[in-house]
Image (cartoon, rainbow, N blue to C red; front, side):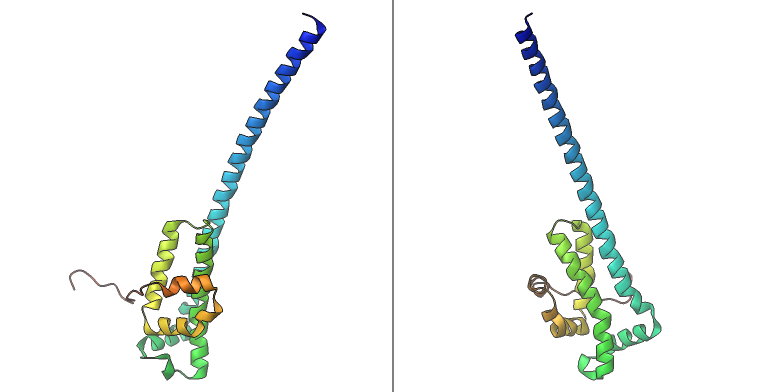
Length: 168
């Protein structure tokens, strides 16, 4: 074999090995991107659920629970004085704000549909109470237009503080 043919053969092997290296690199990068996407989704779920825990933990404080129970009994938010109304708004708005964040995560494919559906179901119950609807009407303008439009299309669900047993 002459020198030129040998050089050609080595060049062909080099191209072949280079092509394999490119394919291996692309497969590796695809695996890494997929892994990052999974981690990003998991982080999104964690952040959203942490936000809901924080927003709802407030109701564990006696004054907040008393106010929430009172608001649930009242026919309208009009029966609250300004201080009570402000405190009531600050009880509910953080839940709506976390819901809005979840909405944008969901729209960006960063939130699992099953988690999203449970978040929507929970907030539909808040909207099912007169004060939830009134709070939304008072503050819907502070949320993104796309989220407000989404919420406005929903049918509120009845809120139950206690479980209704089938035998009842």
